[in-house]
View 1 (cartoon, rainbow, N blue to C red):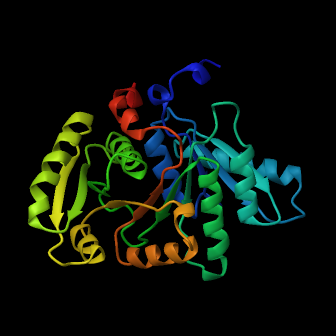
View 2 (cartoon, rainbow, N blue to C red; view 1 turned 180 degrees about the vertical axis):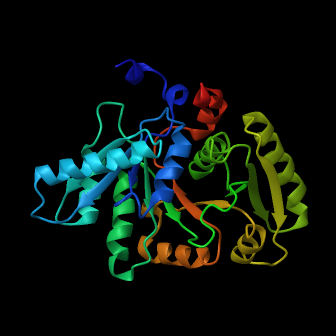
Length: 294
């Protein structure tokens, strides 16, 4: 009740719902969520079973087994196993119904899916989460590099509004976590020519100094190169890349847009596609960032 009455920008922190399936298969999602919460946010690891014959006893046993596995690895979280005829439908129901009052998951973390057969359902699910005002983080894992040395995070930025503010918060939280402690966070912006470079550099430096996250601003002149070329050249040695996603209702064909985005990620380090949905100013949240670690 007290949380409900407080100003959101002063109390905001990520409360992730991790759609992990079997935790051992997608441990990188759980590790990421734990690094973001610092054991202070409310984190839930969830699995959707699609077997219609699954009874309540089996669900309870699976929840208990997952909880024991996570406890052994030092992960503090809630566990939820649910059933549905379809995994995507089950995930949507879970996001809609799970939580109490203000204590609901505000951020959904899930792995990327390159299975063309389910791409439409996958994209519809992302759109549904966004319509429910849940931030979405889709993790496209580089299975060979995983999270690399956890020393450098690249944020490709377009401003404080929407995705931009949330991505800087995520970078700051990771940087101050045990797994990513003192990693270098680079905020990257691309300009068309050298004429625009100086003004953008000054503006970006002023914003970075104001939010006091320790991130390093970097302005890149395109010089007729495509964004895709610049992205792959500039972030080739990063350990983690954060990219914003367009809002589903702004794209005529979100599935086709998502397919193009997936093609862009080929060969990159592990990349998180970020879609902000909450009706709060993440720029204002950043001004309160000391409260994340209190």
